[in-house]
Image (cartoon, rainbow, N blue to C red; front, side, top):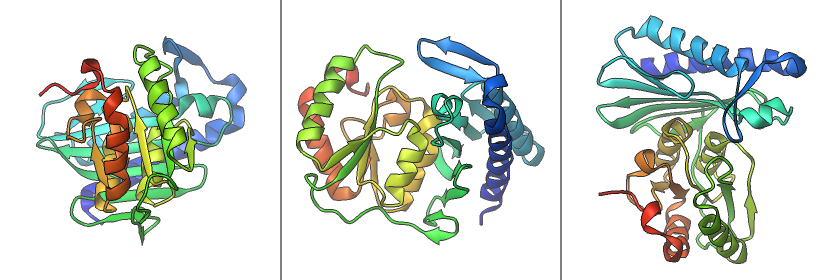
Length: 267
């Protein structure tokens, strides 16, 4: 395992331990609403600080981009952190949440960890070295057509500017796939695509911390990742489409008629 990935795994497991302990006392956790339908708990903050401490102990000169504490430091190495993706699920006792950590070096994601503390599932990837689930190599699905595919998504519940457009997209996806799933933690959805558990996924309005690690996992598992036009601007736009190569292309074609100027990534 790459030394930087090893440190990220250590950080993710520490955060996962904090999260698992907190699940025993959900009724006493302090929660704040950052924005409409966007919650943060003391557990998010505690897990994030544990991750940052672990990373900076090993690499004190690296910079940080974290969901709760924002950006800090100036370095060609930047850690992108979501300490608890799926906070709403977590607060309701729904066991679908994860820790997501990625390393970006000179603009390229090179290391990725997604840790599901409930199942003790550890997804890892290093650029050029493949993607793994608990040390077993994973690959995207081989399904060749959209119609029999299982596709994941996330509802735009925080920013509803594109809600009508999204609902039109979802209607077409429902009519042209085997089924749609919305589990509530984008990082895990992406990891599941990498592992072949779902054939594709799309969502609008995500943060880079939701996507960075999962995107590398999918690429290293042989899949495709893009914005709504299939290009590389997903971390900037917040809009993402992923899948195995054949399903990815068919998803883009299905979504294309719904793309408004506001949903296209600036060039």
